[in-house]
Length: 331
Image 1: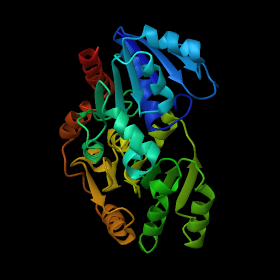
Image 2: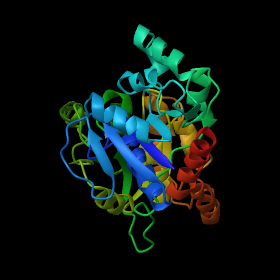
Image 3: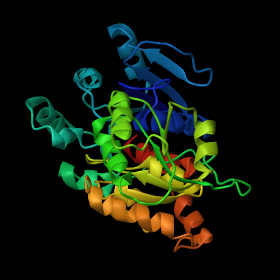
Image 4: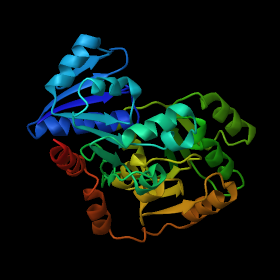
């Protein structure tokens, strides 16, 4: 199958959509399919195993569009829809990875919502997103990098809490820091990630006199994150805004962390019955769960084989095959 992927964000950028698209590309190629990617960003690094075209001109765009049997867009972009004017019968698939279309009630979002009704197939990465769109869609949950994110049986879990994510308002790291106040118990929190909120969050930790208990690592590569996750007991995902899904929850579970997360959009679907939830932004409720985690040194409520069976459904080869099944029906 000849698959052309159009995306506005791709490697080497790091984020949910970027990582998902990269992992799917590699799986499609491994399964014998031809894959080309159009990325509307500046070229900075070369991928030896994937053919990527950065912001191609009109002629190249039409050449690639004519070549493909399946045209796939992770999140609809108007930049990627205009070739359909020249070939309206081309089969194209859209996946919706977040709530951007339904959170913003502007003309652009409404127009995109209108356009997705004409796609050959529409994929949603969670039931929450599918419900918000109001358009029939196939639900395919996101995958995580099961080759990298694993539990190390020899690791010593001497640290308590860990957060992994971009330091932006939506991720709710300020809620986590405030919830650490008045724990009245010794604890260690590691915050992995960078972003525009970094300095404000560091100032908040200093203001609450928590600097001895909280460490900011900045951005780390996946192997470093795995090593740190295996040193911690509990991952905290305190998102304020609605999350399309929650790959980070799967990564935490795969590395042996127990998970505490906000009941936010598709994040609760990612956690399933393998974590504890609190209302987004509720500092007091999160504080109570943190105390429980510090005081409860028992094993989790689920069996290891139950978690293993759960995570199997989110491994990259399994999810990639679900996408290929949809692509095949559309082609």
